[in-house]
Amino acid sequence: MQSDETNETQTETEEIKYRRRRSKRLNIRAKLIRLRSRILNNRESSFNHSLKKTRYTSNVNLNRRSKFIGVSKNNTHWQALITVDRVKKYIGIFNEELEAAKTYDLYAVAIKGKRACLNFDYTSQEMLELINFYLMNSRVNMEAS
Image (cartoon, rainbow, N blue to C red; front, top):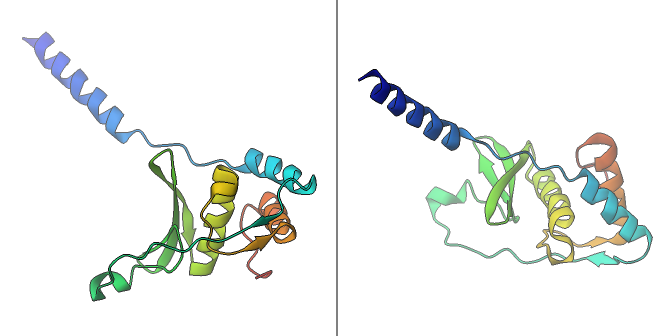
């Protein structure tokens, strides 16, 4: 009788462990270093923005919507998310919508390269400055905007 109960509890704990498994935080440092070298070798010239696909807007969703790709409102702050291999990955939470959008752009370029859908246009020099500041401070430079 006890063995049946222990088997059931083991199965329940295994299911709980499986459900609670979290994805690892995105580490883009190595990808940014490779991108920086490609820019310096003149293999990447410019990065162009894409238009955000518009959804319906109602009064309920108007407060939480952002005009930027990958950015949404989370209570009083803005959060950035990116989809990698059909799974949403959390980038971070920010005080300003613009900072979240620029951080999303940096992650998108690092992960998807030229195919990335960006919020802003960047020259190779601007992207290089963005990458260098991020590598030094682990955040996006908002004073340069």
